[in-house]
Length: 396
Image (cartoon, rainbow, N blue to C red):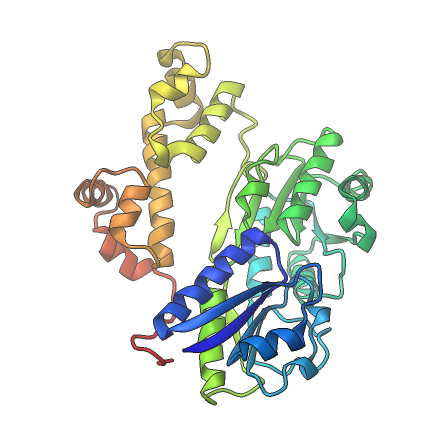
């Protein structure tokens, strides 16, 4: 059994999915994984390598890459996830998120709202490759559409002081023409932008629309209003890194191999979805449906929280949206189901259960009624591309 050390430098929410992808591949080829948290302290590399005698190493290099050095690895095959040019001598196979496509998705969401200008808020260390790549892509998009692009550059000390970060963004936003579309390089910075805009009494998304990256629900759902975010394919990043390491350990790939993984989709929330023309009860109902459609929420349960009759809530909701609350709940359940089908990584029976149907058959009937084809037939024409896992131990 081969032993693989996996170094983590990124945030926990993102790391879970990357590690899940690595672990899925590892189980298929019977590797033993040794995860090491390297976010804040430099690991004792010599001790780790002497004790575990690893056959390979995977480094999530997106968080704190500067602690890694080729000399520490010797001849052990190494694969990097989202590596930085700042890693000294990082000539290893690597797996990267497609920063250009991430920026394109974010910009397309913002451009739908017809902004008069765009803003890019970069990372605290703007020299990091993924931040630079997203900035360059936004510069090209702004130029293509003839829009002014303002760059907000937080200082490194702002990373340790959220209030200072928010104040820096607030000062910059106060002087920008509106409506304005903001692309924040991560969810944490996007949340600060939403808060700064709110302090300026800007209407979101009418005056200021915000899109970020990572789709961390603990951040995005707890913003007020909630934060739209591009969702990278972290699971595929992990799987691809493990597959690449398997090739490297078998001598089947060179040091300069790079695998680019496109993002999954943009998860649209209130920071880019205008509901300001609706009254307070309708906006609340829409947000309740978005969050709870797959958990058994019903029109009656939604109406109970308003202190007015269900009939009154239904009338206001339909007048504002053109559909009943029951129809809106079904639309949201089917939307979530379609996202799962596109990803192609979840069994249809599990999708049916997650989205609130009591059986595969019930899900199938509703799906055919809406789309005219079965879930499996729909998936064949909409599924995202991706490589399969190895079928036998040691296969690539």
